[in-house]
Image (cartoon, rainbow, N blue to C red; front, side, top):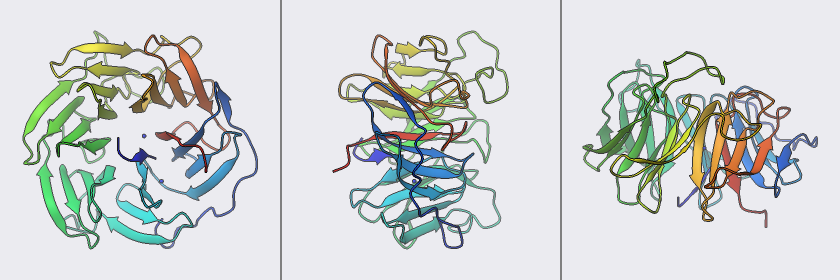
Length: 318
């Protein structure tokens, strides 16, 4: 990935400007500097290795955020508004999907977005079921219609990423499918997340079950790494749709996986995964080796809550 994902308000929304001094984060393994975003506590923050909060901002509903190459932060404030702010919290750009480009009066939610050029931002709209790329003035330069078998303005999509080849990799939550679209909108690859013989069960916590997929990234080897959402799993899948690595709910000693959100494959071959809705007895962010040994965890249920779908490991502060 070329940018650091952050799985970071508009005018009139209060900012949490002061840095929180209290330390409550628990990390096992080598301490990391991380980004965490939780909509139950309405907080997006950078957590230092010692557990203190370096930076924080009040947010609403949030599923995606990025640190841009210029140091600005691209994030959402609620399900429809995307904003870019400078590190000192000056807003330099905003886009409201509910009020622009034909969406007035429609129900729309945004769960994924990405800066895809110096002046273009990819925005994935559930409800309208489309990917658009807009410039700094909000003008559409590309529109891709999405294939959706089970339409839902809340869950047509979760995370989506534009690939280096110009294609789009989309996690379709309501369909339980990851689809890759080419630049013209043709589906060129897809993978239906299996239920592994289990019956679906509603809810968000460890007791729930389904194939509401949350994320997918393309690995350097051509495989696809998938965050299985309420399937409590991480899958690595080949282009031929063969599962070659599968981390399931209860394979990590002393840890139960719930809603698996963001996933990332590190250069050392280890995998980072977000563990949302798992309860305070479980970590919210985990690193595992290929042989499923836990080498690092993060947990902070004081500054964050049980709905932390945004998390990323950050470089050490210079």
